[in-house]
Length: 430
Image (cartoon, rainbow, N blue to C red; front, side, top):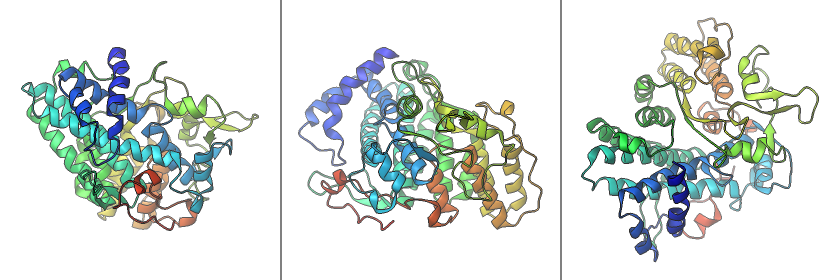
């Protein structure tokens, strides 16, 4: 596996000129040279996971960081970290120069472009079991990339364009639906031909293609307001969690930048940044899962959870999210009985009952609840269960939380996009 990962750096260098969404460039001949063997294409596919999940420039770090500061989950430790400081200040201080947002945007577009090329190659292969693995695996990161942009920006690039005209933009909800369409195509491919062992042995350990695709389908269906589809997809997930795994060569990116240095950011405190009335119960065991209370040092609370060590795995999804998706979908469909029942599965779950150790272990919420009260309770437990998971800003808008509870509502478009794409929309006011 390390041999494949080491080779990714070389291939990524060959593809670096293609980060724009035009995707017709003078380097096209070099890129075509890379896509001439299954081994090379597999290395590019594995590279999607590296680009997404590793390093301070990677998508995962920048998603968690941007979302965390915007929604008051994080405590800035050093104002010299300029992009993080901009996000911490919020409002008009966040502009197109912000490198946290720029990295998330650029990586997302590069992942979509490279994934399209992997999928295109796979569709020409005779070995359909290997090809389906490539399609399913690449689609995971393609969908995550589109979903992350749609959570942060009002409009997202449609994935076509030319060097002269630039890529057109579509509404963010259309972006979620586009990701769902990609996922459906990938699910059909792996249903027709199960991914071969020869493919699965070449990707990082811990990835479950089918369940991850279904979990992302449930997530984005919920965000798009398709509650029946969200319920169906979430109910079809059979594996409790899928995680990115790390080692000494590719360490956990949040640990690498924040936890290990204490010089960038830490968790905010035991309130998790929630307003009075929504803060965690003092007996909620998820607080001690996600943060370490040092009792005396500064800052008092420090990152724990999924970024405690250099090798701490970070979830792509976890079963608590799937249960909360079902709770919300039922509630929005006015099935308040089932909505509360699903919510209470999360509320009463002990750490020992969760595959990742995330459990509130609280008494069940007594019903009946009004729809408004149930939705507020679901929002509260999403914020706690999915702390530092990168989804809270999307949740705040969907649950119509006051603008005063967040530091931006949508992000401005990076200057790298605006300077190169005439279709870039105007920035939002907030």
